[in-house]
Image 1 (cartoon, rainbow, N blue to C red):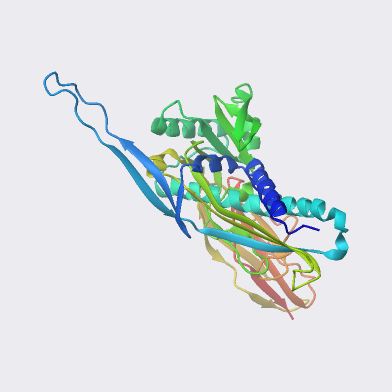
Image 2: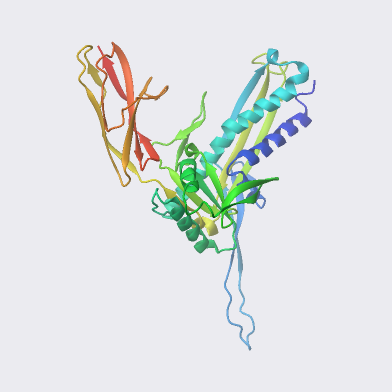
Length: 391
């Protein structure tokens, strides 16, 4: 069987690449990277063209000479991510290996690769807007007004003939659709992403792209090692909305290689082995830095949280507390979890204030708690985990 043939490797790579472009909220940014040139293992050149304005025509001297400045800017790529997947020989028969492998790899791209890439790209664009003070202060009760303000800011920078896109947090998107101001103004239009024409909702020609809240943060930590994956950074904010030109960012993927090994070639296990690698980053040209605008959540500052405590069984009279401040209205939700890493976190019913009184019936053992603090009911941050030892 030729599972390791060049034809199969190419076919898998091409199909996964197509799935990435179609499923990713930011996949269309890859269409903007056609004019790039790779110059090294970690760098790519993207041209940035600048012109001089018109000048008066002189009847004696004629035309005033103007230069065309082509700045071939070199950008360094950061995200080099990979994973090796194995499918045991006994889990498939010889005739079904290609079909099952395609399903598994496709599901991996859909559930792991696409969410991470979306999170990285949107966080980088959001942090760019924040760093250049290209942000607005909106009212969560008036999402339509905030969206219009963002669109106006971008159009003031690029004009009215540029195609714009608006990435919207899923909770804010729901609020937006329930707004009486926008309900009659939303239309359905075609949106080209890769080789596919999608149907998306739009407002005055601006494509509205809803994105799940977990991919709309200003910063993430991208893990390595056995589990990998990504999670919001401790000091991140929620990105409610992000507006930019459709051509305003370049998503560059240098490698998306597949290596396939049969059980006979796999020295580690009696299994088919699939090595997947994607090397990517997103860049904004210098001329477009002020065309990316965002509405981010108010900052939540946790100023104090209870220390770890030891209490006596049968005589528990301890109250955990947190102190925080923000420009937004704060609400709270306490959680119980399994350890300091917050694994197995479960909401504690009714624990929705800045303090939490421990259950007096706790048996001997170790217990872990933290509180999630919300600003305006949307953006959130977690306190440190509090360890409670009952003796």
